[in-house]
Image (cartoon, rainbow, N blue to C red; front, top):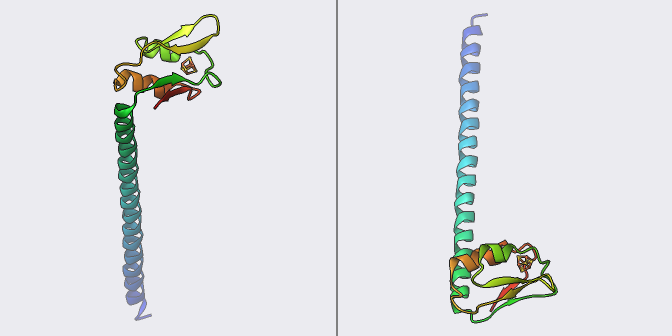
Length: 119
Ligand code: SF4
């Protein structure tokens, strides 16, 4: 019975140490996931930069007629490069100039059928 306070204090110290280890482990996990998010962000930034560089070097804009669904989204976003052929119900390219415009990039990325080709 003399050792009872010693046992209780040892238990408290041990449980505090376990709680501290648990909290440290949680912080390490959140730091790792934050690093992973930053890495994802860097990766998408690099992909966007690569698209812009590729777009700047492009000389030919075209519609892949076997893919185009005729939704007209590209025409609504960038009417300076696309129009809709009412007979075929497909998009057509109206201009091959200013191929490095952001509006064109937005239209290309918005096509639900990936039917716009820029080479
Ligand atoms: S957004 Fe794509 S699928 Fe829709 S009309 Fe334009 S090229 Fe065709």
